[in-house]
Image (cartoon, rainbow, N blue to C red):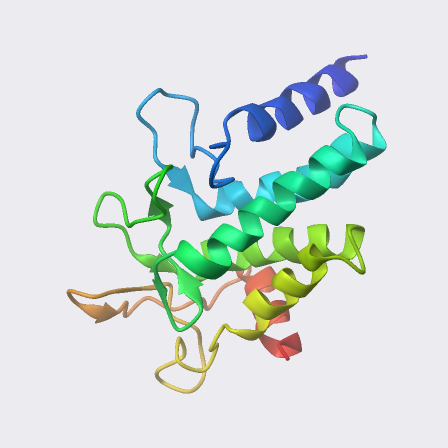
Length: 179
């Protein structure tokens, strides 16, 4: 019962803390929190779970995933297919002078691909695949070997690279398998 309650509360956060026009999801539940593209990725992954557990309908999940991916496809700011880490909930514009984040983009893309697989044969699958294909992984590996942790228009690529065992495993799997 405890695990089921935690699962439902987790789903409810990603579902209820989303902007209903953009699909962007708050980084945390504080009233002034900006959205995080990683949170959006987790939210897209939560949608199929919510459908399968009967917390939302298939149509509700499809509509939310479609709205979110359409927004990313048309209105999100970024660089080389990567997106800013923190963004304004209503506009998708950069918040807090944040970086374009390689790992947070990877977490978003993993969620988009999960939703695309669940809603196979729909525009969700098409948009998720296109957003994935649009990422220029080589641009974020300026030394030709390791992917930079981020980029800012004011300073360029970060010197720090993903060179250890952690969540970057997902990032490198996506880069290696990229169309």
